[in-house]
Image (tube, rainbow, N blue to C red):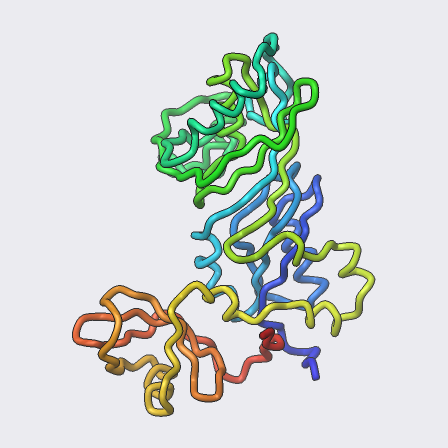
Length: 306
């Protein structure tokens, strides 16, 4: 039975629509599931759509495991046109003829696979000298910003139609697809900007699992909360440690216990003997297991999916 007065703990896989910020999407979802505590696991630009995992209650403690995970997208680039923001949020300022064939496109895309160094766009939330870059951009100021290392795991052409190039990309956290679009256009010699972006995967979650606001609004509170994945799905990439009753008691009180296995520095998802998720720990020297983040006791958890 769902406790309607308790805020839920869990992960909602939302299919974010275009025209809304990730912050507004979170606020709307919080109202729909009846939560006072929530967060997202990496924003999508307002014009972008697709998978936006939202975390509520105790799940917010473990959101970094999705923030740090790989992402996948389908992106549409318009070749021969450039905008200051690299997407549709600003007007086209440069137009060039497009004289590239499919083989040239494929070769250029292949050249981006691997470790790259990206310069964050001015219209982004990266902090430089205590201010976000978009604040400088709104004032018409351009500031020097350091490049960051990202990894493009795959980048493939899906189709081309007229001047539109559709690609799929899998990449590390912190990758700006807008910047990637601009860089592809520059390497092709014709320029490009992003006209559509849809996120298809975050970590181990896929877009096919996500729900739209229209579906959520048609359901009651019980149905909406039943859609929440339990907090432990955020840490399913970690090694699992099934604690003994004594270890679970130590861990639940934030105390160290010793388990002589594994390598120091390894993070662990800790479960009590009955299978309840207790939190995340880290192995230290001498076999010590240190608590990092603990689930609160007595909370109303979402149903466990197996």
